[in-house]
Length: 321
Image 1 (cartoon, one colour):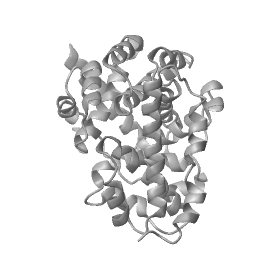
Image 2 (cartoon, rainbow, N blue to C red; image 1 turned 90 degrees about the vertical axis):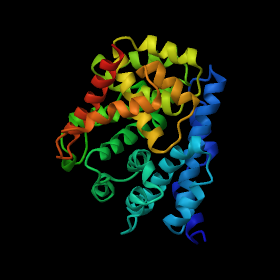
Image 3 (cartoon, rainbow, N blue to C red; image 1 turned 120 degrees about the vertical axis):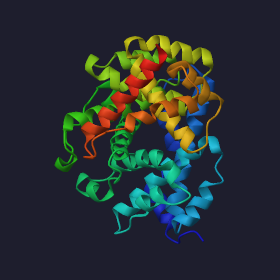
Image 4 (cartoon, rainbow, N blue to C red; image 1 turned 180 degrees about the vertical axis):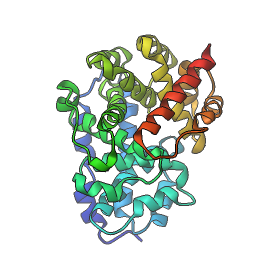
């Protein structure tokens, strides 16, 4: 039975579809097919937020999310983590953390960690420590989500004016690392802002300082593989335009193959992207990068997270030669 607080929570935490569409109307619209697909992705994420804040418990929420088409279910779980994190920020509860380890929902843990980061963008930093994911490696994806939110909803400041956040809680460690991870999320947002138009996206990335472009391209790799909306010819064009940053583009793609395999949601587009960027199928790429986890330090630091990503990039690049 839905929570009696659901309507109030929805009014507080769920962006209206109309407001989200207004934001996206300010993005590139030259590829109508891509723009429509990216809107679908975004609306399923917003729908996940709504389902989460209206639910009375996680079992009810999981049942609701099971009705979302498999192609979009990861985005809905990402949204669910946004909604639950918002609820948890105002209570002693820990529904978001519980959902990430639930028997039926834990396969979506990677996208849910990103969702936590989206929520943190609207939550005062003194509350972050209680809400920050606990997984020693994947938890840094929350900073990726934070960067995505800032670029998507505050485009003028973070994309046009290229503002860089420098104020992170001390307990999170090296701020230079955090700025880089936030750029992964910003790069994902550039795929949406560029409307899935390879030339426009490359122009956006190229407008940033050179030292930021590798991380931005890795974010593009995640977005183009996961959100999609384009044809194989467009994927080939993205690969060509990435130039020296192709290993980072492939890195982003490889991370998505892990998500698609883990959630049994591989589709025609993700297969095409894996072949274009990694030179292998989704399953082959996922198996290939398993070795990236061997011997990693277990210190839970952002440095180790970045090392893990570097290993993935190296492994995929080596497999293409």
